[in-house]
Image (cartoon, rainbow, N blue to C red; front, side, top):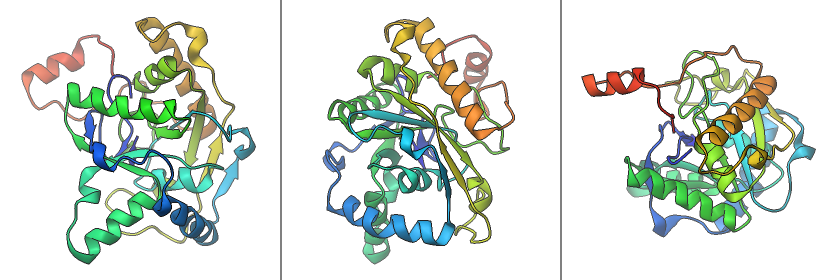
Length: 267
């Protein structure tokens, strides 16, 4: 889910970078729905899926922190909050919160209970606005989860990281906890309606990374070095094959094809 960024949020579930949040519904603190979700959904998910959790003691329990994870499945943004020792917020498509009737209310309540923040698709300023909301959460000492690859891997490989997570970490000074998810794509493959009960997942938390040693957020070199350090840590935890390229949707126009070929910073 999650997604859930560099100057653009690249970590939303099923959403590539560039979305603008619905400011009226962004939780500033873990509210009742999330508290209830952690009290009910977390132990239930642990009982049913028996996730293997490694390195949980490495996660800072107070202060701002960024979870940077590989992205294999829709349920990644459930797996991380379930395994983490503290509340975690991430970006999710606003459509998950806008359904009507009983089913719509149930869906909205569920996503609120697992710490999701609604965002709308967009580009340019919309992407920057979404990033700004994440920065505000970090300024309040909260934890956010992001996917540096930008969107889910469809072939199981680990793609190059975009600089959004590094930019956010360099701006706020928040430590980055790398996360390696294993098996979530088997529990809930792309297109599946419900998770499988036959598979188990593994959630590995790595040592917190201080990326500020690379320089200021305004430095493109610092953003790239920080991103590469984060992705190397995720790779060590997930043990995925490296794709060596960015995870980008097929270009739809000649201009988009040219942009993908020309060297530029992926955010």
